[in-house]
Image (cartoon, rainbow, N blue to C red; front, side, top):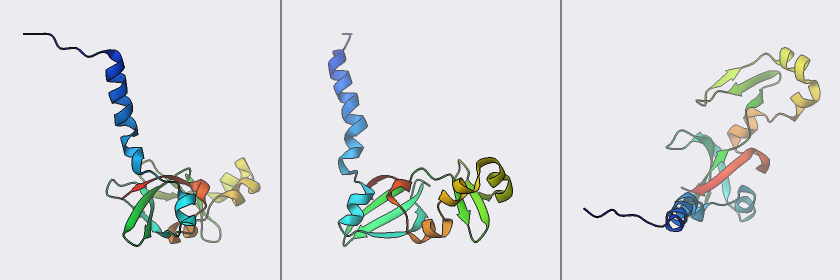
Amino acid sequence: MKNFSLPISTLLAFAIVLVFADDAEARNFKKLTADGYAVGELTRNAGGKWGWYLQKQEMRYFCRMGRVSIVRVGANGLATFTSSGRLISMDKDTFVANVGVNEYQKLPRYENLQSGSVEAGLVGRCAKA
């Protein structure tokens, strides 16, 4: 039996293609919304990831929720996302005492995330759905 081997450069090139193949349809949330894509409500995709579907005619993208871990809920509530995606409440007074009221006021509102009224900085990668 003959020993089969490929040059390292060939294997490396193949690995790079695999890593970036999914990015061929990746888009930027800010560019998609500027191009007239409508932002849907906060939902989970088929893989269970939180994010928003953006749609324009037949074209549809899913943009994952990015750097969001703690959100303001209602008038005085505070909650955090667990690693599995569940939303659990937190004690606002403890948070404010340790971090400060200014940081609390910078947190996104859960109601805004739910409705699709989201800032581009809170959105992660967008991919064709």
